[in-house]
Figure 1 (cartoon, rainbow, N blue to C red):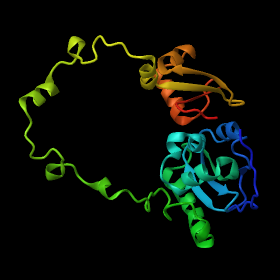
Figure 2: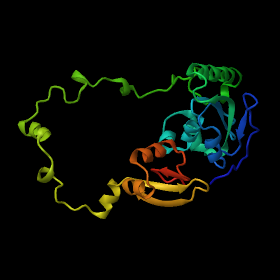
Figure 3: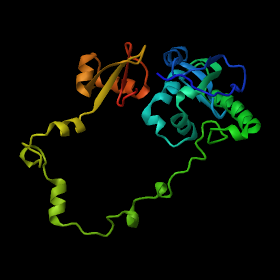
Figure 4: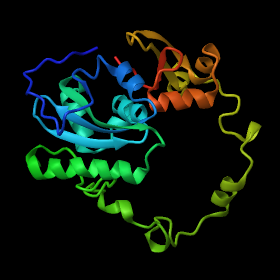
Length: 251
């Protein structure tokens, strides 16, 4: 587990927070438990650059713990880029408002409170903003590749106008089970099996020590849980019976 290594700026919060986590890595489990099923407005602060991000969540624990999820951190947003570049151990996290148990307030009210802090952030600290959009709940400002919005129908389809042979069409509709499968009877090498087997890494949630590596099926059997439950906790990053499950190595 990494600890802050500075030099760090003095934290600049947008209000007097109800909870502050000066070392999110160290307090990761506490972040999950204290914000579970609570609607919140939160602020990330880069302790090296002083840059800030404001967000909201209907379920605080799920949203906040997602910042440790590798697949989430690969998204091309400034906050994720900053966490990847500086390390989450060089960030501080504050809960600006706790709006109560999830469901007590509407999504519209949550967004209105987030908007309050976004207005403050963009007006007072325009050079320290990590949010893409000035509007709560919007991803406006994220630039997709030009080809992202293209339709693939008609002439834009790379197969448009090409005639298909009888052999090609036959391959698309033939039964590929049993002997008709080109891999039927072939023995896979150990290296091939490793490549196609989806590994689950299991950690102790208290100290993040590695318990073991298992295939998906064996992991579900070992820890007596359904595949759906396993998938749910891998995606959320939340602990299940004292264990963290991940597709990628966490340390």
